[in-house]
Length: 174
Ligand code: FES
Image (cartoon, rainbow, N blue to C red; front, side, top):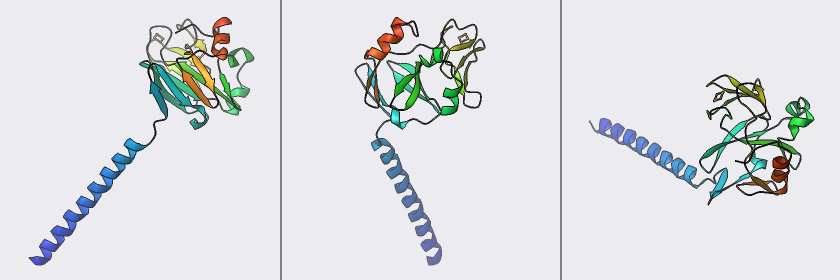
């Protein structure tokens, strides 16, 4: 009987310890810094944290923002005209765009193997710079206002690189 009680005690202790570890893990997750920092209409993202050909969805003013760092292989296949859609920070080139289809606003999904976006609503497609490759979207995914600050990007502020994109028609104002 006492053996059984000892066993029950040990089992209960084990569960309690596991629960404690779980709670610590949950607390650590809460304390971990966020990948992006948001304040009053601005979202700051640090581009050095992103990996080649891995899509990350951030948020700016309630909109999904796709961030896609281009690999050397992707850049080699990108036409000069389409490179205008990318933001160069340090040695890296990044697509940073609003993740809402320019046809009727669905959220396209990225296929890292094909390196393209597909909008499942009506079959529209975009390449890795988010330029349209298949209708019906009327234009590439829009690029949000941004200002480059070292390796960081402040979304919601307007820097000279974004002004240039607006001026040459690379993106529309969002
Ligand atoms: S909403 Fe994307 S193709 Fe129609």
